[in-house]
Amino acid sequence: MIIALQVLLTLLAAITIWFATAGPTLPRETNAIIDEVLSKELPEIIVGDTGYALSDGLNIWYESILPQGDPKGTVLLIMCNGGDALIWPPKFVRALVDAQYHVIRYDHRSTGMSDLVKDWDRNNPYLVTDMSRDAVAMLDATQVKQAHIIGFSLGGMIAQEIAITRPERVLSLTLMMTSGYIGDPNLPSLSSSYFFRSLLQGLPILKYRIMGGEKNLIKERIAKQLTSSGPAELDIREIAELVLYDLRHRRGVSIQGALQHQTAVSASGSRYDGLSQLDVPTLVIHGTADEIIPIEHGQRLAELIPGTRRLWLEGVGHSFPVPNMKALISSILGHLVQ
Image (cartoon, rainbow, N blue to C red; front, side, top):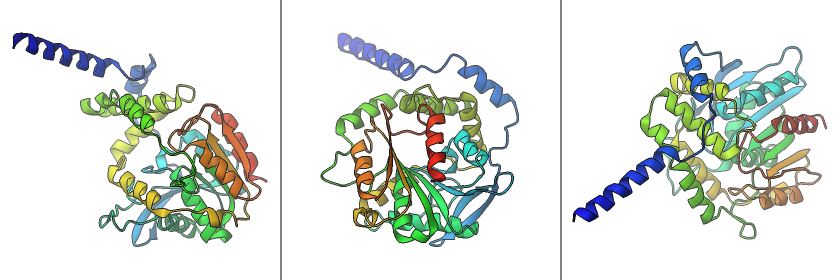
């Protein structure tokens, strides 16, 4: 009995040490930068005009950012599953505005400052088509007739729906790490090995959420970006300011929203027929190491949409920002003027 208890205590101690020390190593300057951000007044994170658009009876929050001088056009940014407007990296947004584009970003239904779908039914969920109406409502609310649409993951699926159902509103498409039919039986899907590997990678990061407090929640976001994107595009100060702003002034991440969005994707079926009929300048961007939506889905998109330009990111997974954002932004800006 005593030996069994000693073994159990040893095992618990080993698990505790692993939990405390495993996970990505944060940069040496992390604590100092976070402490500095915590000690000062936050910079203005929302720099554009904000409002709510009505879509399917829901209030959908948006931000509209105008450049100095006359805009070349409007770019509508659509984020991933569970993602709100602030997940778009500020440097990416600034690059578009500095290139003289009017930028609109928004919180998906059930995320951020947008309304939560309270009467949601898993057996009768809303679909990606419904979410595309939210995006069109952003254009209506800001009196924009046509826009360049940039979508990441789920955002790319919503962008496809807009191009299929409302082609007159679309100037160009930029589709990143996305699919025209996530359930295509002829294409690879999320593997069980990746699921368990990511679960193991994510467990040590939970320590920051368990310990709680603003500083640890900032560290959690930094650790997640290190795990998904690596250190190349890591901006600790920017992440700290975004997380703090979200914690203090917004509603944060919605697990319920992410579940609703994933169900919408699964229930929506194929867009292949509509995609093959599109006549819109399209750039498909996909990471060769994407294990959530494997690159074969991006390749299939590029085959289906006539005249598509392709950009394969070597060694990049399902993440944004990606390494060498400067080159990515240059490719996107070049596409917008085609």
